[in-house]
Image (tube, rainbow, N blue to C red):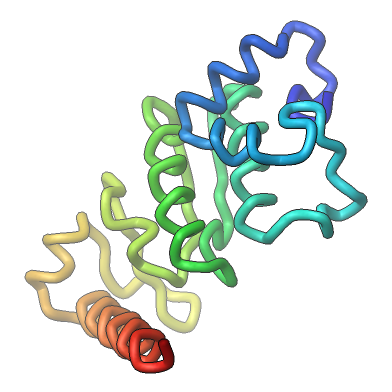
Amino acid sequence: ENLAFGDETITLDKIKAGAKEIEVDQFIEQLPGGYDYVVSERGSSISLGQRQLLSFLRAYLSDPKILILDEATSSIDHESEKLIQRATEKITKNRTSIIIAHRLSTIEKADKIIVMEHGKIVEEGRHLELLDKNGYYATLYKAQLRHEVEMEEEQEESK
């Protein structure tokens, strides 16, 4: 019911097919009660990444003409980020999508990236074009990449 967002034409079979398509079916099936699991108010019984994945499934099932994703991968763990990135590719396919992101790995495959600084557009293009320009986007991207490598190294050292 929650995933169908009140749309009675969305059956359990359609929900399961959508979940499989955007690769969230295994996560849902592992919940106590699977697709019948009741998420507590504000989703406090599941992780932020899991809440995000359920939101993606809801969006996928509603099939909007225009999709806006705002900071879809902020404040989530690395594993959830990978799932969300794959789901993002699938839910944005063949539709107009606007993705607002500070984590640049989220938008690498976008048809067009618009880079803003202090409210002004400073660059635009595809990921590789922007890296080749070696401008503001490239600087941000390289800094984020270095930070991710440092975080992974710290995690390895703490094991």
